[in-house]
Structures are given as C-alpha cells and as structure tokens.
Image 1 (spheres, each protein chain N blue to C red):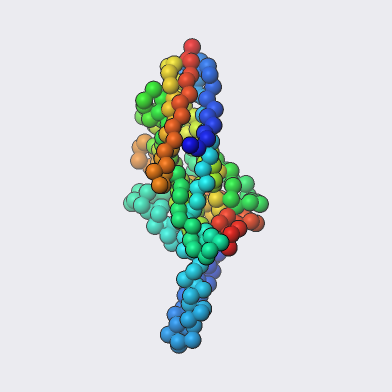
Image 2: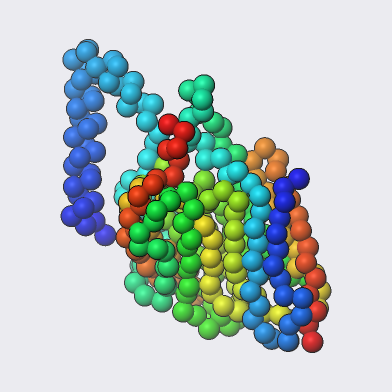
Length: 106
Length: 166
C-alpha cells in the first residue's frame, strides 16, 4: 500500500478558500528507461487522481509519465460545509489508493 | 508558433533521418540504423502542436490570463516544480474548466491535464514534473466561455530526466 500524505486544514470559515496538498509514494516508471539487462522497463504510473468534497468532484488530474516520482499536487477549494474530502489515485497494473480527510466548517 | 530555434531543430532532425535512410539503403548502415532505433522516441514541436490541437480543436489560442511558473534554470530534470495560475474569478458563470501542460522534447508531448470548476475558488494548480531537455513548456487553460488562453516558458535543463540508467 502506497503511503499518502494529505494536508487539509482541520477547521475553516464558511466560504474560505482552503489549500489542499497531496503527496503519494509512487515510482512513476516512465516506460522509456532501459534496465540493467538492456530491456525497457515497462511503464508503471499513476494515471488518474480525483478529489471529492462530500462526494462532489472538485479536482481531477490526468497524469502522464512526465509527472515526477511521488506525485505531488497543490490545489484549492471553497470550504462550503463540514464533511469529508476524499482522494483517489488509480494507475497501471491495477494500482489504487484512497485517503480521506475531515474538515469542520464554522 | 515556430521560432528560428524550432526550424533549426527540424532541419537537424530531417538531416539525421535522411542520413540514416541513405546509410540503410546503401547497405552498410546496419549498426548505425540499429543504434537509432534503440534511442527512445521523442516528442517534437510538431507532436506538441498535434497534442495541443486535440485539446484546443479549432478554437483560437490567445496569450494572457495564464501564468506558468517554472524555474528558468533547472538543475535536476527529474523533479521540476511547476505552478499554473489562471486569472479568473472562478464563479459559476466564469471559471476555468481545465488546465493542460505540454512540452516539446520529452518522449511524450503531454505533461498533465487537470479539470476543475467553480468549486475550486482559485484557479491555481501546482505539481512536480520531469523535463528531458532544455525546451519550451506550454500551459493552456480552457475557460467556461469556451476560450483558450496560453502561456509558455523557456527552461534550461542541466541534468535531464530519464537518462540516469542509460
């Protein structure tokens, strides 16, 4: 299971724009490198990242091999109500990972 | 838009492929041809334009509104911080729908495609990318009114990504 780090403020004022940072452990093997045996190392990357706020999609990214290892994202959203912010990653070779953060909106 | 540099690159590439074809047809270039095929595929300004066209379609691409932030001198192409900021109020009627980033010399022209909406509040996205060579990176933003805006930046890369095991 890949390790993921999520940074979401625990509390926010209603209507405030909050910053969300995510980092997930992944090689992001490009498929263009040659291994020690002279063969190409097959591609193994995360292809999709989705962030949902109480089930509503707020951010989606399509990743390509040009994304550095351990994909890191910073993005913003408006704190509308208390609830859960969920994060999902999926990629090659059936890779999936999910994390959830809770936020309290006053 | 092709610059003098692009033209120069294109002619050099054409010269190399022509030379390879010539060597192959003359029958003495087996080893040379092989070394060319082992070289990984590389995106070119042309493939970048094709990738751009898949996103933009027939709409016109205007400069402005988008700000692409990359260090002008990159010491390690494996991890390059990239920030795209779009000047937009991010309301339900006027917001950024998508941000795409392209490059011209990595093996693939696409870097990332991001979809956002009025819920984002601020049209800013940051990540870390790989760059294989000194090149121009382009960001495109699609707005809710159907217009496309762009920004590009020339980056100098001293240590390229994807070559450490070759």
